[in-house]
Length: 253
Ligand code: TYD
Image 1 (cartoon, helix red, strand yellow):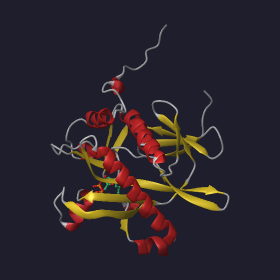
Image 2 (image 1 turned 60 degrees about the horizontal axis):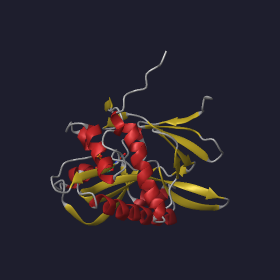
Image 3 (image 1 turned 90 degrees about the horizontal axis):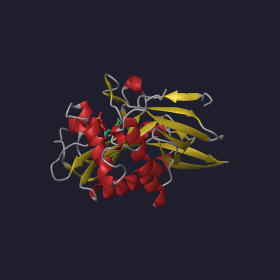
Image 4 (image 1 turned 180 degrees about the vertical axis):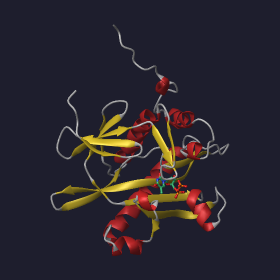
């Protein structure tokens, strides 16, 4: 196969030039990182699971009219996406307190919030993705007031969709992060869900037992991350339970 041009390599994914202008190929790696990449490991099969899960969520969102960057899955680890201009913000929606919100506000993990709360973090690894207020976003011109209103509306629609989907398979959506991109159509811009939606960027707890089925399993050394993600995929009917443990291909002489 011809060598493709690498556009960008992140912690969990690589972006390559796509087959047509305005497209990229998004490749899902097996690398797991936490605490701003201070903790690292390779989790065999994670990329395959996240590729399938992200495809599943993005197709579902499109079906209910929430625009995304997703075009189609190409193979086990790659998907074709639309090239968008990423807004440099992590958009977080929280239904229950956990993680940094629990620390910041002294709330016990699992405390139900009075309503979903949308937070923004400025995307900058060297600063550790600091929490920012809408005032910062507008003053520093990262997004306009109209963009902000649209981002909140988009994030809340994703929250309703994901919460309902997860509830149907006995999982509580505690919180999640999305990234949002601008898609240009001549002078007209649309905001779309970009990047990925996967257990890497959500907190997912079993409703009955409270068992964690997300990246906290890795962050907090709670067991096998690939078993947790496989369980999410299995419950959603995305993968047969053994599909990520397929043997590697062997050369036939
Ligand atoms: P948060 O509790 O703020 O941070 P941490 O995961 O470090 O405890 O995260 C809230 C949710 O957003 C959680 O599901 C993880 C996700 N998230 C990311 O995936 N990437 C990020 O850079 C940030 C800030 C959050």
